[in-house]
Every structure is written in C-alpha cells, then in structure tokens.
Length: 315
Image 1 (cartoon, rainbow, N blue to C red):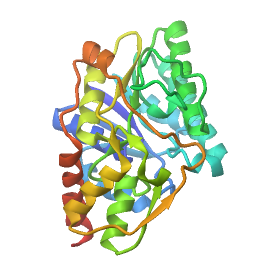
Image 2 (image 1 turned 120 degrees about the vertical axis):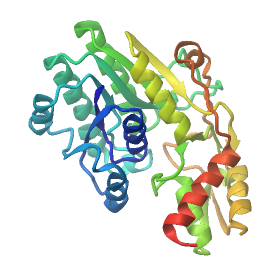
Image 3 (image 1 turned 120 degrees about the horizontal axis):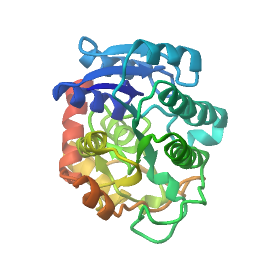
Image 4 (image 1 turned 90 degrees about the vertical axis):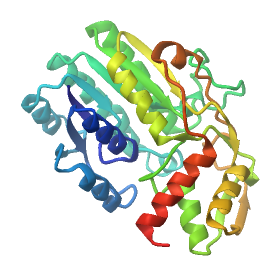
C-alpha cells in the first residue's frame, strides 16, 4: 500500500513508518521538523529510514504545499500523526495548537475528500478524558470537559473526522494513546528527562509528589495497534491504546533507578495546571474490534529504553 504518514519524523510516526516499510508498504512522510524539541532528534530518526521513504518538509497547516503532495502521490491510506504535542506547552503557546491540530487536521480531511482517499487513521489522546474520575477510561465515557487546550484540540479532531465520515463517507479510526514511551522518544517526556537527569547527577521534578498514576504504553504496542487499525479501518470508531495497567510515578522512578544503579535526587512538587492525576485505559472495545492487546510490561519497556539511551548518548 501507498501510505502517507504525517508527523513521520516524530516519535510515534517514525516507528510507524519503519514498521510499514518492514512489511513492504510504500511510505511518504510529511513533517515540518519544528523546534518544540531539538529538531536534530527528528533528523536522526529520519536518517534511519531516509533511503526508503519520500520525505517532504511541510507544515500541515499550509494547504497549498500539502496539496502538492496529494496531487503528486496516489495514497491508499493516511496515517495522521502530526500534531503540536504537550499539555503544558499549550498553556504558553495556544495558537500553535490551533494551527497544527485544528487547521492541519482540517486540511488533511479536505484533501482526502478532494482526492477521493477513503481511509484515515489518526492520533487522538487519553487527555480527552479530562478530569473524569471514573476509571478505567472507556470510549463510551463522556469527553466533553477537557482541562487543557491540547485535549480540546484532540477532541475536536474526533468531531471533525465524524463530520467527514458522515458527509463524505471517509473511514476514520481515532486512537487515544496513553502515555507512550520507548526508544527514540521525546525528550520532553518523563522517561527521557528522568534518565538524562539521573545520569548527569541532576535533580528531577516529581509532580503531585510522585502520586500520579499513568497507563504507560510501550511504543511497539502502540505501533501494532496503529497497523491493525490501518488494515481494518471501516466506518467510524474510536479506540483506547493503553497498557491497561496503571503505574504510580514513584514506582516508575524506582524502576529507572534500579536500571541505572543510581538513586535520583527528587524535587517533590504539586500537580501542574492542565494535568490529571490518573490515566487508565479500558481496552475491551479495542480487543473486541481490533484484536489488540499490549505485550510489553513497564519493567521490560523501561529497560529497553535505557539500553537505547545508553547506546546513543554514551555511558
């Protein structure tokens, strides 16, 4: 298949592109290589697959440039992973989210309609559950009270895609990712930040005094869910992709310390604005429809990340 992967230089997008190539698909990547975090990491990811993909450095909010890509290639499916990420960053730079997550997604949908491409798999987020207190989070739960702009834009994507499914017959599967981690991960995420700081004998900031609960989900499991969705996308549906096994932040840090053989110096802090205390995925619907369930537990996943980090950042 000929598949467009937006955000293909990003953490999840890179791994998806690599997996698609390994199974024999043709991959076209669109990514703007923005500086939300060091663009060199994005370039390093791309370098792993650059000889096998067609890459365009384009911002998806630029309709004209994006249309040039759609006009040049005949896509079978679109895997839309490009987005402005980060809950906390959305408090400081709200318009970046409006451009990338709202306008960018609308551009993708409009071009799919125009060029008669029917199958879309796109990234949503567990953040759409907002301050819901019922756990685990089910796709049947209300998601009408987001508590960050990032979450609001992700929920809007789910609504946009429903409109295009209803009006134009697009097949759209939305995937609510739960705290994805693993090799080549984002340096603004907790695992990367903690390992780097501990290695450098620097203190780590521990929010909600280590009592945060997260459904950490390993990248290989996320990729398998995305590929299953690309193969099975039909109609309109939304799925949770989470490990379905919540881990407290203090335990998460403990596993890192055990792997590094060092105890972290911790700054215990209150919870940040826009954040939630717990995420937990109900994956019953995902298992039933996609036949997906996670394979990698937190101990194994953290070990794999640290092995990658040490190999790529020195011992």
